[in-house]
Length: 338
Ligand SMILES: *Cc1c(COP(=O)(O)O)cnc(C)c1O
Image (cartoon, rainbow, N blue to C red):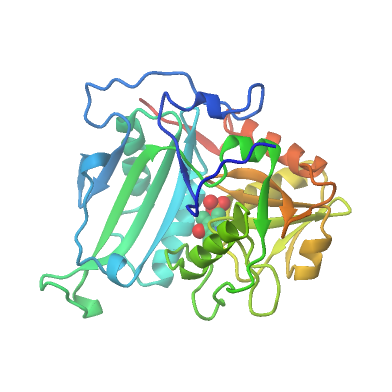
């Protein structure tokens, strides 16, 4: 088993051209073969900041943005694979739903946000890209303005080379996790888990604890000792051929939605419900699912093997199906015009 040492960071960066050897040969996860036309300053990364397209290396926002000062924002991360953007409509729906709950007005329609997003990807030329859309409460005319009614909300969008929560080798061979002893996931009455957010204090503490205990990542429990989620991923357990994933204290992940749809197509029962810590430890298979990490088998939990300690049959079947969806013409994908 190959496990990459990624420090306590949650994301592994990928540069176009320098990446293909990371992908296990013959596996279902393969990068496109292409060269960037570097005569464009946008090659390799483009952003939309305050109404203008800028090269990613020049993307800057105000230090007075309350998105920075108070984490007063919502965001989403979509991905482009083989030149196709995956479930952009679902990402925008969740983003706009979060904005509405936070009383944020992006000032753009869903269609306009989709166009700007696809334009960023197109300008970046990236065929595999990590695409971030963030809506913040912004800043006011007066420096450091805190009056919530006097702030101009902001939209930031960028497309950059792929960032992996779980790089391809971990998705193929599996990865390791702990259940943190020192931190629990914020409760849904504290931080609304249905609004994707950067209030990562609990998730970051959990990542450091994982690092200290020699594991790659962490699965956090909630205050009721039920499974919540991990740093940027949903958790799905498999027991006796059936899938379950937490209904509370977890983001309604778009990857998880996809995993449930794949399970349904395969005739596998999948339920959103409370998943106790006992069920996590007793699971036959555990998977971490996220846009930036596909479907990753967790093969070790707190140093003990999950199942037989190798990627399980259900997880690997769903993982392989997930990646084939990125190429198959369907309403889930949209081709970027480069
Ligand atoms: C982004 C994220 C996920 C995964 O959601 P996807 O829509 O599948 O990318 C899960 N949990 C948290 C806390 C996240 O931030």
